[in-house]
Image (cartoon, rainbow, N blue to C red; front, side):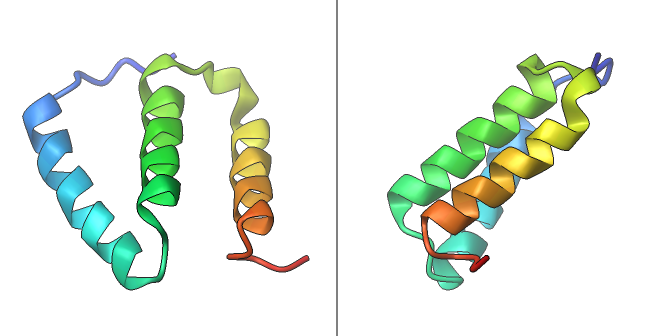
Length: 70
């Protein structure tokens, strides 16, 4: 379980920087939104017992969207 306090203002600033970085790498706005939602869910709402599944889902997302080739 994540026990770190959630500072939404700092998160919003980092989201803006990450959004810009992802856009420069060629991700679409839909892909960026999906990645940010996944990250938020995993960090603040997901179970820490499924770390491996988190990574596999992210890799699957990248493969489906042509950002990573199998």
